[in-house]
Length: 212
Image 1 (cartoon, helix red, strand yellow):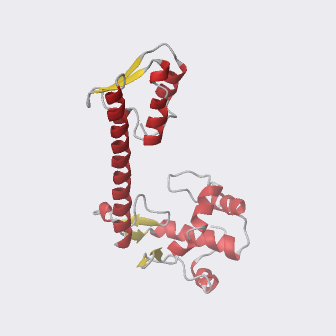
Image 2 (image 1 turned 180 degrees about the vertical axis):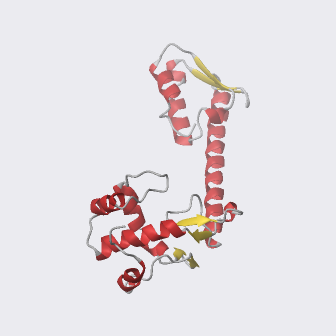
Image 3 (image 1 turned 135 degrees about the vertical axis):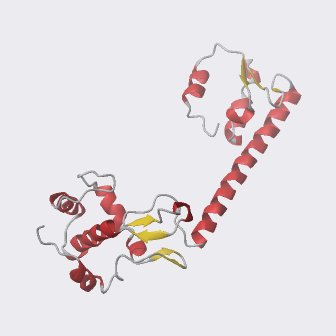
């Protein structure tokens, strides 16, 4: 019930052959207070009503409509509080220097403790990361040319595909700070790349662009 852009809801609104909508729980119908109030404002004028079984709400009476609007506000409050708790939880994980979600390309997590969020260097992928930055920053390759070079060298994506997408390379390039070891503010990750200024020297020692 977060949005009105739902197939079932839109079908209902396009069909005028109904008098009352019955929902087991109100928050399955609307959990956004603006949507709930906007929808209810024209109900009685059109001879239509809403009922929720769990709260015994029935908008056919003034008291029922008042309860509906109060509960709509409480539903919005619950949604906002849940979102706030989620944000605080994610912030806590980041403050501990841990990664949230799937590790970015070039990193992995400890196979025996994948839930701790501590990033480790993925040796094979980290070599590809260094190659990508070398091609783009030192070799003057465009993003599309970098994709083509990876394909030419037979380097596969993490999912095992031979074709690299430009959006993937662009995302990697935009994460230079991460690959330099800057995980979050005040937190570090294992560095794959040297800092930007000495990067060309470091990469020239580690990455060979010759044909395999």
